[in-house]
Amino acid sequence: MKRHLKFTKLEKSWILYDVGNSAFTLLISTIIPIYFKSMTDAAGIAASDSTALWSYAASVCTVIVAILGPIFGTLADTKGFKKPLFVLFMMLGVLGCAAIAAPLGWIAFLLIFILAKVGFSGSLIFYDAMLSDVTTDDRMDMISSHGYAWGYLGSCIPFIGCLILVLTAELTGLGTMNALMLAFLITALWWFLVTIPLLKNYRQIHYIERPAHPVRESFRRIGSVIRGVRGQKKIFLFLVAFFFYIDGVYTIIDMATVYGRDVGIGETDLLLALLLTQIVAFPFAILFGRISKRFSCEKLVMVCIAGYFGIALFALQLDKAWEFWFLAVCVAIFQGTIQALSRSYYAKIVPKEKSSEYFGFFDIFGKGAAFLGTTVIGISTQLTGNSKTGIAILCLMFVIGFFFFRKSASITNSISNENSTVSNT
Image (cartoon, rainbow, N blue to C red):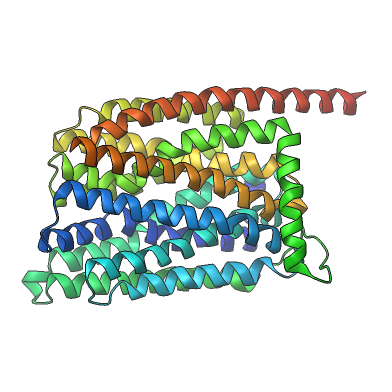
């Protein structure tokens, strides 16, 4: 058993990329929105309008990646293409993160942020698709869970350093703006450095042979994947379910800080509570990864969806600092698990030699959901002047997601039972 849990060099390298990109995710959830809010406050923009602007920027990112995902995803499954495309998007994210440090106005800041997040999100298409090359089916749940777990914990290392810089900026004479600029540069450097082992060790195992015209062929294969998704009910139902339940997850991640500030939570409480989320998420992601050996991945995903439904309900009445802290811990319990197990569940039900193609569509449904969630919050906040209206809609999303995921899981389980019966015979 001990030998089975030991990670290979390649598995460790793959997990490390989660440690790198999660530092950027944490920055997006904490310091960057507060920095943006400060910029818009100084420009005389109302709080509700700045929240809406941040929502729209997040929505633009998701639309761009949703369009590019299937195109580059199909191209990445061609022999020798996955790693270079991963590097291209990863570097766009890293350089964009560093460029945010430039002292520009809020409009230029948002444009650079969009480029950085497109690079980050695009890299994850190829990174997630690498899972089938990195490990075996029976280890996917565990490796995927460890990726998120170590991502949460590892991202705290640069973040704590950045937080100390920002909170002590006036005492040290560095100045808040200079401290924030250093925070962006530190995060970009961390992201790049911990990615190096994956760049050195990864080799594409599952692929489609390189055709004479790979770009033209990738467009042709998009239609083939669409037909494949529609023809395999378990994949189609899962993607519909994923669209709805991950909507709430991504929207809560993207909007937690601005929502907390809108309901009167102080900046220090916001930052420390979200740091706590990262720390608490680590053991729970590991725990659920181990539990997946005893309970099916499908059951654990349904538990997480139900947990998030409760979180969204609680957020509707949130107006005190301790409630935000409590909510942060609840999110930590399920956040890494629902993403990790959704990723590994999908990797197991799609054709391995076409993993990037299918993960391109996985990203469309995931990022498309995030587009819907952030847009709904943006529009409802501007119309009503209250962020809570959009949160109420997220509750319904979790209910619909639960329903469709349960139908997908029942089909997957029946197919597994049939295969088991045939092999025993």
